[in-house]
Image 1 (cartoon, one colour):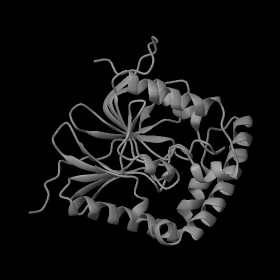
Image 2 (tube, one colour):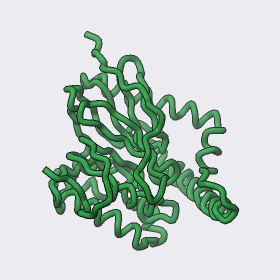
Image 3 (tube, one colour):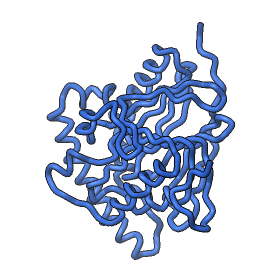
Length: 274
């Protein structure tokens, strides 16, 4: 069966499954144009939207929506119409859609979490991951403050890259660099990843696929494969599964051409402890 959102002659990369999270549509920081370009150049049997697709937190404060945001939604719906199984797992920024869990809207199934069975039989827990972020879960006011500060950093990042582009330099994420310099943020990321891997192990799965922290990663944590597809605000990355069950992180920042794979990362065939 053909699973392409467009019928043009542009070649597309075919995957068994694609996982996208944290697009934050409705914000100026969303790289919606790059995401639309990415979606036009891939086809898949299963498409997972792993939370924070539409940023309800930001839209409640100020409305921002342009034709690229429209195009992303149009392409997602075309995937569903073309026969791709589209699953939407709302996150904390689009938590308003959690009221619709269990429904199917325009071919898009809304669920709290999912279990994805890879082509090689491995099972992966798929969830946004905000349940394991203690700041979001227990200190919502602090999380909102953090969201405001983060938005300021992203706005600065936008002007910074406008200047870089005019000078002929490629895109570079200032906000991502700043986040990596903060030791506490690095420690928090490690705690988050460890907690998600432990949750997958508790349910007897081989691994976990999530989003939330805007940090693309594939790594073994105590015999469980942790995978995070990243985001479409800073890194513009997605996670993809090949027909043989191998997983790959994709870099979608290369505009006007097929997304290129990131350097190979190990995806071991894991055996769960007895």
